[in-house]
Length: 562
Image (cartoon, rainbow, N blue to C red; front, top):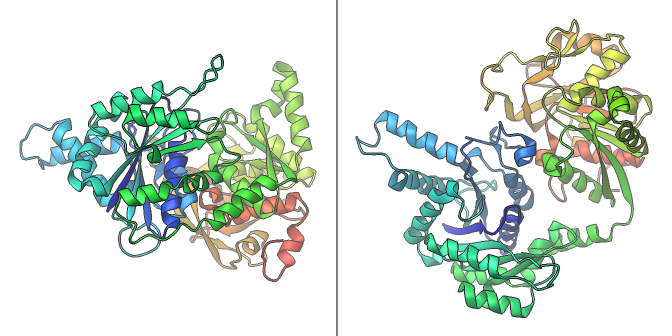
């Protein structure tokens, strides 16, 4: 196994995840099989209980793993199906070590960070890197490892030491270290500054790791003099200094690396030139150029709780992008804080209220994504009502589906206090209830998680046609509340149709509204399986409906692109 380690210095948020994914894309384009591991030094066992404001979205895998959003980047860029073990956290490692200690596996030894924790990290990396995640048999050729955080952080020290030991164990030709760093330009001077990177590399070398490559993030392309200076003071050959400057869209990053012959240098370092081919990135080139040249756009109202941070809905944004590009459109996402639509905000914040409603009414379609808690729910219900009454395409995901059910129960069936027991545990009309198998005492990993099968109740439903499958679909879930099966028949009297259910027939998975161009709610999260060039069907149908092209698309016998 060959390892490519990506670390970061100077500041966080430099784009290590996109860099690691892009390196994987270039190596895969050279005919190699690639797998990925993300190391997160926080003490949480997984990302499941973290606020989207704190850490961005929680990405869900097929096996139910709740992981860092960077694994979503890996899956989208490399078209992989990763496992929960591909995300290593300090919490998982310490939990594993302490379980062994309690069983007596350490034979009475004093359990210490070195060697016991570092050995656990090394063993984890070596075992997980051997798991095939690309649908083929046998281990991959290269494992790209991203170390989260910034070099010098106290919490990442055990991982740095474990990776130093791994480097020593596997040898120079089996381990490549790429350090991502920032090259800032001070406004007054206008000069590209290398000192932060020099200090970052010095810190890394003091910990026993010397970078083989520098991936320099900058606003503008690096000057030759800057590269020479970095080479001299960071002990890295000029040919191994990669410049990842700002680009129009992130699909340019693999092309940027290819154009700098990064693949050639990495393959030479890992002694893989003899088995690799010239990189074939034609699809990526086409995709990046198409996106750059798009002129028409579609306005999408995103009505949610966490709109202050775009990373909170990263996979939804990417799924919208994939669907829009398939329709030769550029997505124009209008972020609307659900609470700004509520009647109370007309008094407390009249300007924000007026802007929110004007934005909603100017949009071609309305999307309500997932979320937890009761903040903003009234605003989401108003958005769903607006979309239903004005025949505006609506897509509700997870909570968004439950919102559509609550709205119809209240405003069509006249059940004024209809609600979810999540928001009102004393509601006389609980149209959404806590799932029987859920835990009310523990939050982590207690939801209905991972890939589950949804059976279509009729092949004539809109969503089945979009999926090109008349029987079923497997999608990823993350929820602890569900539509009340005891009220399903009553709800269907309103025109709502539960066209998708789980294998027991008791859990409502997909809802459609009759006599509406596109009013769809899904309990699952289709955004997690959307890929560039292979958009998620519900998102594709949503965008097609927004531009009035859904009918022609469905009538096309090949159901191909327009």
